[in-house]
Structure formats: C-alpha cells, structure tokens
Image 1 (cartoon, one colour):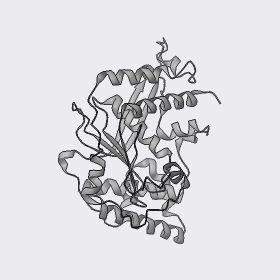
Image 2 (tube, one colour):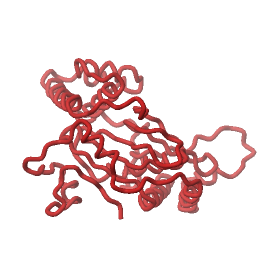
Image 3 (tube, helix red, strand yellow):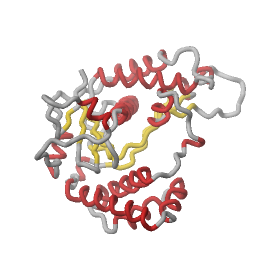
Image 4 (cartoon, one colour):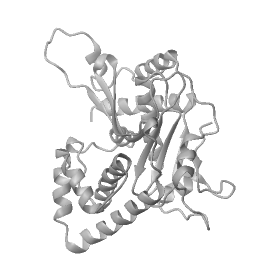
Length: 307
C-alpha cells in the first residue's frame, strides 16, 4: 500500500481523494504549517526502511516499461529497429504534463507551450523564488527577483512580456499573491545544510526502446547524496496553487526517472504547497515504482496512438 503522509490531515475524519479533488480543502482548525527543522524532518523521516541500491530493480523496471509499450506507439518502438537511414530521428518526448494530457485524452498544445494565465505566472515566479531561496538564502523584492530570474530563461520570454503588460489591477493582484507566498517560504523553509547537496531545477532524462523514447523531467529540489548503497535522495516539488490528485502521479513519475538513472531510488518524494503550507510526502516503495512504470507505459502508448 502506498502511504501519503499529509502533515495537516486528521485521517480519521477526512477522505483524502474527496479533499484533494475539491480544489479548496478546509484546513483542520488550529492547524499550523510545519516550519524549520520540523518541515525538513517530515520529508527525511518517513517511518519506513530506506530502499537499497539494486541493479536488478532497474532492469525489471525497464523491462516492464518496454514490454508494456505494446505493438503500437505511433512508430516509437519501430524506431528502435536498426535502420540504414543515417538521418537522426527525434525521440518521442515523454514529460509529466504530456503523460497526464495523453491519459486524459487531451490534445498536446503546440510546442507544449501553455497560454499564460495568472496561476501559471504565479507558479513560474514562485519556482524561481524558491530556487533563489535555497541557493542564496534570501529573497529581496519578490516580483523583481522573480521576473529577473524568469528573464534568464529565453523560453520564458513570452510569459515575462505577458506579466509586464498586465493591466495594473491584475498585475497588482499577482504581485500581492507572489509576495504573500514568498514571504511564507522565507518564514517556513529551513536553511539546508550544504552537506546534503541541495540541488534545484535538477534535469532528469532516461532513454527507452533504443533511444526512440525519452523520459524527461526537471525537479524543483533534490536533497541528499546520490549513488550510495542505500537510498539517500529526497525529491521535492513546489506548487503555488491548489492540491490536485495528479500531483502525486507527477511525483511518482520523478521517482521512476531517478530510479532508472541512479544506483538507488529516492527514499521519498514530496509536494510542498506554498499557497497553504501543506506538505504531502510519499515514501518510495517497490509498489509505487511498479505503478509509476505501468502508468508511464500506458501514457506512452496513448502519446504514440495516431489521432
């Protein structure tokens, strides 16, 4: 059984799925968000033994993924067959967002670029500010720092322009929410010991089916030393909006990627909600990884089906 450890929930009276799906959960009266070392300990101490490094686990997960792709993936598997054509072939790119849309039967946006919205802008700014907080230990002017951080990435040029051209009232509302959430981040998040190797915006890529499929992700924060005999890495995603069920699937996808590319899987994956201070923690288990592999294979099949 996969256990989701939610720091604020009374499990005797609350139905997790209904609460997550409601979009605006009612917090337990008197509940206070975790802060400082208590927040960090909730991620680090799962109450379960940490997984061991196991090369056979990686082989089995790869096999289950590739066998689960089936005969039709829009030509993706066919690309694994040796060809005399010297022209390079772009692999089928599989990300958490593409997986989720494919499994819901939704079309993929052109170039995978989502149209700007206030919630998307808030999330992008909070991501940058969280990265700054972990790296530098402080946040100055949240909007200015956030926009400067986004401007470094040319892929965010359209979003930066959209934010800067918002009507004054809408930009003011966005700025107020960014300031509120970033202030709470500064108040609640502890300084991470350099010995834990905190890493932000960590890219993860894994090739499948002879390189014809590429699993790709980028995590907000990884803590711990990879490459040890016992799992020592925790992965944290920061969300500025409401809790949603698909956020757990995203975490499990990241756990799968880290397991496929490292000697040991992560021992925990977590989502931190900067809007409320909620923290969801999943200890990583064999069942979690197997389930993530099955879902990923199903998503790849859906991505490859001609439409």
